[in-house]
Each structure stands twice: as C-alpha cells, then as structure tokens.
Image (cartoon, rainbow, N blue to C red; front, side):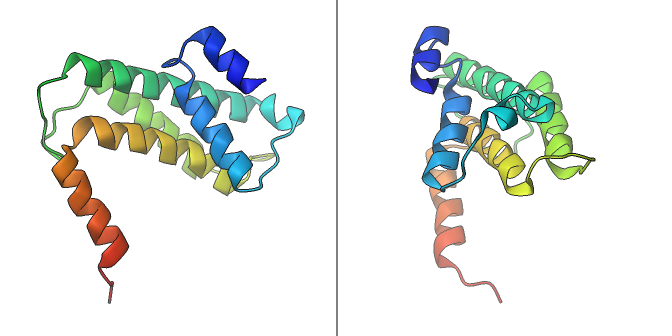
Length: 136
C-alpha cells in the first residue's frame, strides 16, 4: 500500500512518510487506519514530507557548495516549518498522539536537515561523540 503510493507520488515526494512508516513497522508499532486518518497524524505527516522535500531540493540546488553546521545559512521557510513541527511534537493536547510516535516525525525531519546543512566530516564527528564519548 505505502510503497505503491510512494512510487505514484514520486520518490522524493513521499520519502519522509516512507521512512516514518518503516521505523514504526520495524519497532513493532502498529499503525492503524484510525491513526492514519487522525488529523494530527496527517498534519505531522504532511508537514514532515513537505520539510524533507524542500530540504532535498535545497540540498540538490547547493550540490557542490558545502555549508558548515551552525553557520546560520538556512532557508527561512524551512526553518519556519521546522519550528511548527517542533511545536506540534512537543505540545500536548487532548486526544493527542503517542509522544514516541510524534518524535519519529521530528527525528526524520532533523535527519534531513542535518544532512543538508552539515558537511560529512562534521556529521562523523557528531556521530562519534554521541556513540563513543561517555557523559559524566
């Protein structure tokens, strides 16, 4: 179902949705039809797809131009949508979605963002710190 939908819309278009669904399936979390039609789930899915698609387009347009992480070089529209996504994920409301489920959307968007705005060497340094440095 989701794979044929992804192929129908285009590979870049539904990439984030596919990743979110894959994470849910591999973690053993069942995503019901009711959940898929929940307004907040649909908003999170739509916003995350939109953000990731825009980030991919931004990254493709800057192919040979490396930007350093933290340099402040961002697209204002992407940053604004990321802020909206963070608010949707962190703010609880009545009849809200599971917090872990909401965080998956944010994690996927952050990964796209990080990949677009940080050079590979910086990403490797950050990954090494997270995986191998012990916090006191």
